[in-house]
Image (tube, rainbow, N blue to C red):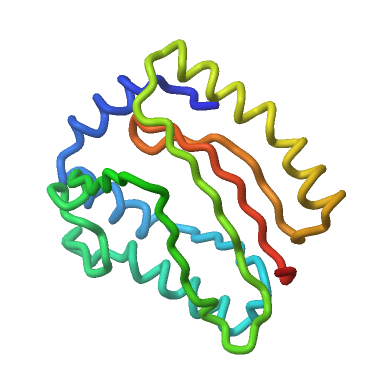
Length: 169
């Protein structure tokens, strides 16, 4: 679905200097940067506003273009962290909203770094599973009110993800 190829994007990332990026953010802020946030689930209006203000803080710069929010330095942003797992990994996090019975289950299957032929097939697979995943898990089994099945890219790794959010066990 991307307009630009991976190599074009990587070229632009490599050629972007930190000062240039900071200047871009500064210009955005002075031109009237608009932050739009969609909060889904049992989150009240006030907590959603707090989330939005935190997001705004993360992209703020001062008049000199120096970042005063949480922008990563170039070397930090380029650092990658990989876990080579010898068996399936399960991660559980508590719902941060007290007394909220909703939860999200995310199953992710990573396919490594595919060649172009595998990439095309896997991206097609992602398109093919979207509707059946929704129809089966949301409509027929009624496991959650938010259900997605999709393929995503993380740098050069493809990952198939099935997400269900709701209150059923």
